[in-house]
Image (cartoon, rainbow, N blue to C red; front, side, top):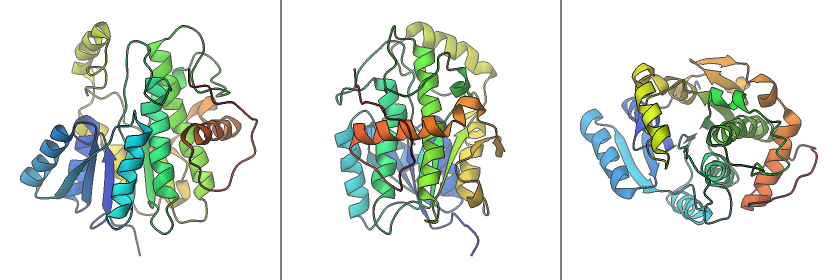
Length: 299
């Protein structure tokens, strides 16, 4: 039977605004049962109400804070306790912050929200017997190619002075490498993993941070950026297009497979990053890939 999104359950993190809301709205329009996983419960409920009112689709919201491992585990428990996990997981939520901060779990905020949080959520859902998502889509960025140092991933937090753009780029590279290793670990299970570059999209990713200058620059530049609906095109494609399972592990932009670059193609770095992330979150799934070691150093 060919792939069809109609009637399938889809979780979209950060689904209350921007690319996440546009993705959730389009999938609901196509008949999916959408769950908006959002940090702010009021915004989540309002977004779900809007989808139901404007599209007539099926949508509800659940609270999820990717900066908290406890919140992620609670969300996964609630989801799995309501009859099983989703058919599709879209790791969309992300942050860009101007100054160094640390989450309650001890890890740098950007790396936790953009990588470790999605890693843990995916791991919890994919390791549940019989109910793993059939498609896992992680929203990355071409910014991942702008990592100025060898990321190495011998540790999760980059040493030295905090650089917001480099930290964000590194977290996006982590998204690409995570997808690559996840696909290898899920091979033969019927599940597929994809990374998506949505393009430069006018969202609030730099508006909700703590850098006034960054927010101002982003607001001016947003006039030349894609709309959230345009940015959602590739995640929607990966969630709905039949016959792409053999491209699992791939990096996509504008609804086509593209080269992730040298750093994004490094399988040994992907395996090292996975081992670090599994140790940091206490969750693992699939068959391990041989790699160099690495130590977990939150701060």
